[in-house]
Length: 330
Image 1 (cartoon, rainbow, N blue to C red):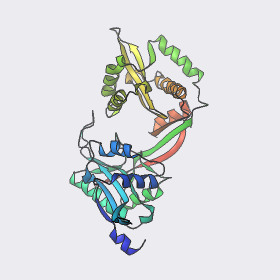
Image 2 (image 1 turned 135 degrees about the vertical axis):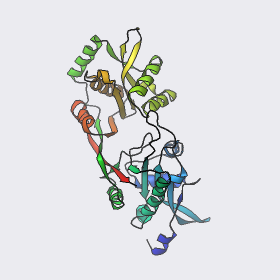
Image 3 (image 1 turned 90 degrees about the vertical axis):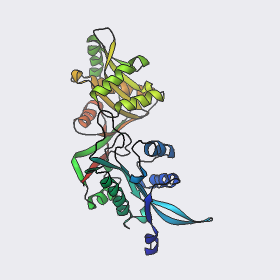
Image 4 (image 1 turned 90 degrees about the horizontal axis):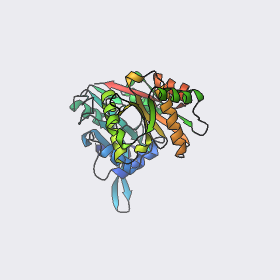
């Protein structure tokens, strides 16, 4: 790339008409993490926390038969909470960079630094003290920086003062479904729990109130909102609940798991029932349901620590991606 072309690149806020160019470049550069224009609209533009003041594109002139037009050559999305997350709030000190990339032909020209300067300026104006790449919910795209697929992005962040967050190793896991069969010990556990009055059921409307109350009381964040969205979109048959009869005779939800196509999770069990083995049989029930639905692979994007060991030891999942959550203090 010549000096004149480099000097012609400019960085500005995201504007009407940028979506097609951004999505096309996203799919060209982020080879493991493609996106459709619809998903960009839903997860970026329709995010309640989106602001063009935190979203920047790098553009260069591009000649066309109609004359000079802009070509998108870079993108960076910065997010701060403008609306509180249920049970957590605004997280006033935190900001997130959830996606960034530069066209390979324009890399190592300082364009990434220009984008970062704009986004970090937004973080400072919003009085953020810590910026993460990228643990933002609900609309994260990658659990962190994929250090195998995007080594240049990892090096870029380190160059600009980001470091791995303490405990910031996260992995994606998965497995082929065809040979996954519920083990005998899990089958026995199903019967043991049934004898204690705990059963697994496919979600029905009658469980909606109890499930949402359970999630709001025990799992602060966006889990309840995800369930609300599944109910609204008619995919609530991809939810399994663990229920027990209360003293009033009504069934109470004390655990749940969900999936979406081949994607598994999240799932959770009430603190008062942990250690009963409910998590294991919830997992295997999902495996059964996914196989019945014709899925061939099961995966989850983001886990680590004890949870990763559980999936490996109890479910036979293996690591398919490795990420680092990067952080910088302002």
